[in-house]
Image 1: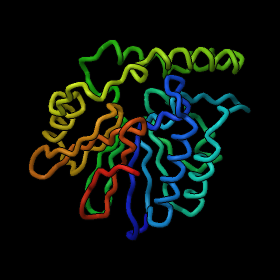
Image 2: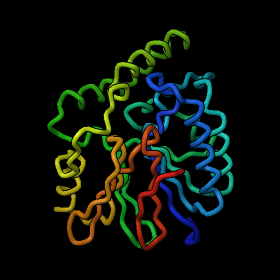
Image 3: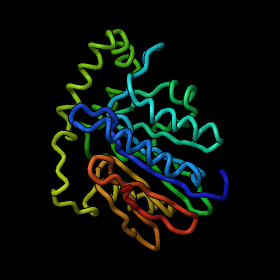
Image 4: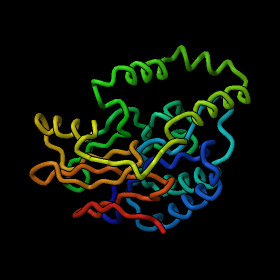
Length: 248
């Protein structure tokens, strides 16, 4: 990774979400953001739920997203590391994005050092050990047997099922006026507990569609990246300071 340039973080774009009516406009806007960062990005982290649904057949991938995939491929072709974290909406990523686009896929939390600072990066779902129901559901969805069975379905039928499921998800019911207390979040508590055994300078999460940049203790910071539904937000680290910005 080059010491020049900036490191960018973004999550929860939910490209192609059937619960939303402005998918084309949001995709075009996201593509403009990729153009905006392309000249000074030294590393890019896509922190989950970039797609509202993704499933790869052996010779078929989801329709759409051409503008975004092309720009990500251009960035990766320049030698810029582009990290893709599977979220709860796009966990069925297999080999297409790594082999065709050049992305580095992460399925679990990832710890790395960036310019002398230690980062723990994850989408953020499944970090609450008390949420037994969700942990069981996630274990079911990542099973190879379920993925094999789903791949037996015709794509038209399979994607119809997936989009109906997405329309009934919390994405269609999201309310940014809800009271949000970052210290009550399971991810915040996870970060606090993690610091008891290992030091991390920055905890970077998505998933909650909220923005937060809070100090944990002794300078460690807890970051929620927001989303690209109402916030159009992203994180940027220049080697000295981490900032949350909105793209206009």
